[in-house]
Image 1 (cartoon, protein in one colour):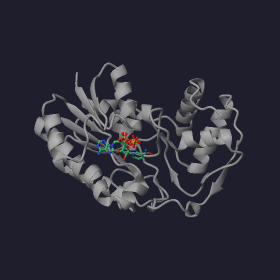
Image 2 (cartoon, protein in one colour; image 1 turned 120 degrees about the horizontal axis):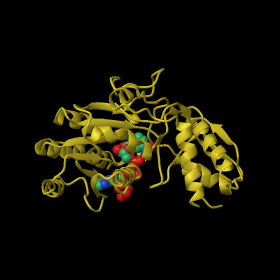
Image 3 (cartoon, helix red, strand yellow; image 1 turned 30 degrees about the vertical axis):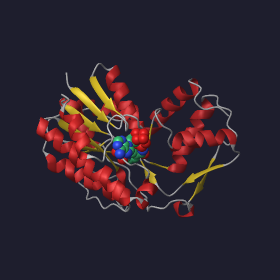
Image 4 (cartoon, protein in one colour; image 1 turned 60 degrees about the horizontal axis):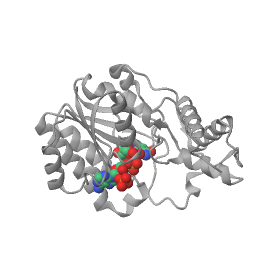
Length: 296
Ligand SMILES: NC(=O)c1ccc[n+]([C@@H]2O[C@H](COP(=O)([O-])OP(=O)(O)OC[C@H]3O[C@@H](n4cnc5c(N)ncnc54)[C@H](OP(=O)(O)O)[C@@H]3O)[C@@H](O)[C@H]2O)c1
């Protein structure tokens, strides 16, 4: 059995991978930011060199897109240089590095979902710093994977989906952007879809992992509210109004408008197909509502 190290296990995706793979019987060793802070090569080397593992999954990242825009040095240090350091240690140990990356490496100007072979052209510091990390991981050796995800949601940390339901419980009107498209991605689904890549799938490269289908934030939010109503939540707002991205004055970084991820390669080589995003959102909202997570 592979021993799996997960970095960034205090975050939304890292927590889910640690939970799901441990539940499936994998030998998982997970580190949150306190347990293994990225950014100091000596600490990382000291910590990882004393461990035995076959796979390291790096979910740790500076993920606040607007914060990265004004803290470029830190963004490149954590998302770029530290990713390189982790991958080099994996290569030396003969372990596989699975590095989580983002749809924001693309400029969003495509007229079809992005494939792994499409050239990245990031618009923001966040996207550019993640791109540096991708390149470093792929250059470290041929057994490593760069896994791009998009619009991640799951129980470990709130995301857009949780926020819109919380707002609809207390406010009479909610809005969301109606001219930005991608593929929502459930963290539990990523755990299931990536499992074959821990050891069974040979080689390495870039891989897109997302739930199937495309939507705007407005459509995503509307479906979340529809599911919340069906789950019996007493919403004050039941309709999500549309606003153009240009109207969101709080955005500091430039965001790509169209970044759905084509998952054909995932299905071909992992032999598992992602669920439609609406099914994944419905199951998530039902289980969170039943657990009493959202209260008005
Ligand atoms: N969220 C999305 O919609 C989305 C979309 C596309 C791609 N991704 C990618 O998916 C991956 C996981 O993201 P996520 O949604 O799980 O984000 P997240 O919840 O922000 O998790 C990232 C984790 O990295 C940790 N971290 C930040 N700086 C660190 C440092 N210097 N040392 C150690 N740990 C550090 C954070 O620590 P704290 O707990 O202290 O914050 C957090 O636990 C990232 O690579 C991200 O780029 C996410």
